[in-house]
Amino acid sequence: MEEAQLQGAFSHNAQLQGAILEKAQLQGALLVKAQLQGAFLHNTQLQGAILEKAQLQGAILEEAQLQGADLRFAAIGGAAFTAADLSLSDLRQLNRDALLQEDYEQLRKFLLKTITDEKLRTRVLQTIKKAVGQPDNLAQASINRVLCDEEFYTTSQPVFAQAQLPHDSVSLVPYHIIICIPEAHSMDYDADLAPYLRDLGCRNLHIARNLVYRVQEMVEPIRKLRKDLAKALLAPECSGGIALPDSIKQHLQAMRIAACSVSQAQLMKNDHADYSHVYRKGKNLFVNSE
Image: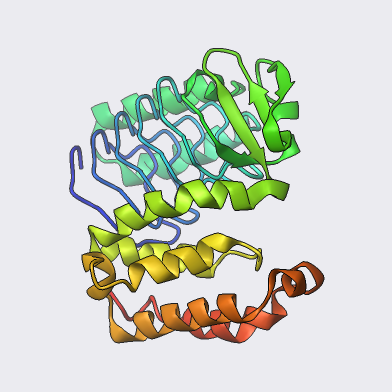
């Protein structure tokens, strides 16, 4: 699937171990829990992609474009990020543990059955095997204004120098300037991310659909991104949003109203129960909208 046009692809638990996706167009793709161990994602366009809980151990992500991507809880042990761009991405709760030998053995057994091309299978297995016991090289990526948590910079390899920046941001400077916005200041992050995701969603119906899924799944009710993106996708000039099914547009409107009707002070006191009726209703909209 090299250079494939897959903008806004929608797949949970996709089995893509060792897949050749070099230069593929996967902007805004929904790849929650995708199995991408050892996948070739060199120069792949993954802007705004939803890779929450994806398994990326040993994946080749060199020069990948991951601006604005959601990588929460993704496992990246042994993954190669040289010259990748992760600006504005969400890197909270990354799993940076190295790939274990037993994990490799399970993958090997799986790939022996699923990849029939012997040369390709050998190449993929060699790539994954090299990642066993190895840390990721996230330090070699270009990272700017990412949302992260303390775990990101206290366990980084190599150890990053830390310097205080405005709003308690942390500057981590091994090879590139890395600016990490702590979760407590997610509003600052949202202010930058919202217009970027708006531009992605407004150009493509399928990307817009996946972005709605992304924001409605957010567990933090205080996130301004939900309201701003809902408003942007409902604007008359947003072709991707206008093309959405009526059911999803109605859900967007409900999200916007809910976000506007609850004051920030209330949000600080309450959990996301105020929004639960909106989100429960929205979870089933995406299965039937493709």
